[in-house]
Length: 226
Image (cartoon, rainbow, N blue to C red):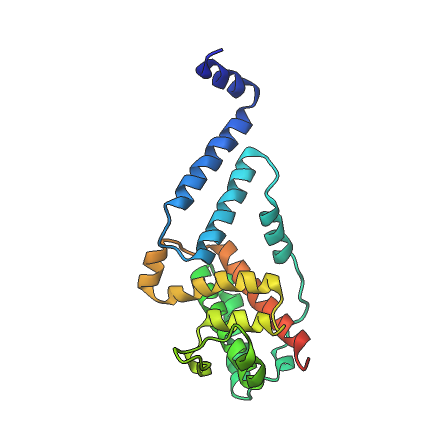
């Protein structure tokens, strides 16, 4: 049987499987041609596309997608920022931002929700570093200058705060993973970064952004004082 006849026979017997195969291969080519995206954003977009292919073909989503669904399904209960022992002037600012994030989610402003979530995460991690300077500075993940000296906290990137917070046990592994994607969304506050990434947060993105923030708050509260 010729290759063309075999393909037609396969199409007649398993049309959904063939569609899934074609879509999957097209996805791999597409993601390969996205060199300008950061690794975290690229991985996030890739995962969302895989979930779409699975839904369109009626096939089970991959384990990674299930992992994301599990993360989104976590209930962190009543979030109280007062448990984090924040600086007195910082507490009302972050409480106001958390309220605003929820408003953005309900009013169809996912980009604003993602940016605010990332900004708030950075504030929380900086506050933790100020409270536990020795732990943050002694981490093997702490950013250093050319001479090997640890940078001052105001010189740290959000990526560095995330890595160190995980390394010293303040953030769990799943929170660290999704926090890096949130970091990329936070950078969209710069229009040129938004344009370069060629990706716009949608309601699902905003939901994940808030969930990352809530998970980080829960982790920081749970590990406080350890």
